[in-house]
Length: 171
Image (cartoon, rainbow, N blue to C red; front, side, top):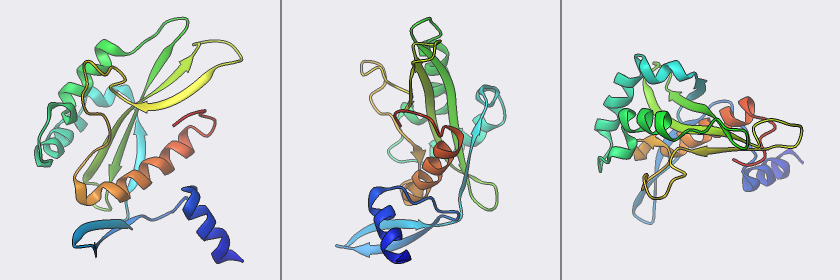
């Protein structure tokens, strides 16, 4: 039965939705959000850390409260510049995911990296994770997004990661 399969997939977090929508709902008096706004996510290249995306990201950073340095584009660009690895036993590649709405407005940024250990050879571990694997430098790691869009943005990012990195060992 289709409903039972869909429910099982939802419970396992494997449902890949084509349109995500965020609708505010009330539960226990707290504002919660479900995935109901049409967002699309795409992976952008390293040149995005020097292009017009930075101004949009900076505006998004300014809208987030509390405002912490770890969500700013400058922090993330500098973190990537100084902490990425390109060695024999570990190679990091930028995995910057941007989430936009139907009007092409920036909704969220997922500053992530794709890591291969070792960097070459047939047997490698491939992981995807947020910047800041260094607990002594980056206190907060994760999606840069306003709280009201977080659920739908996470769904869009996961869909993009599954499409772009279908053979990743760990997300």
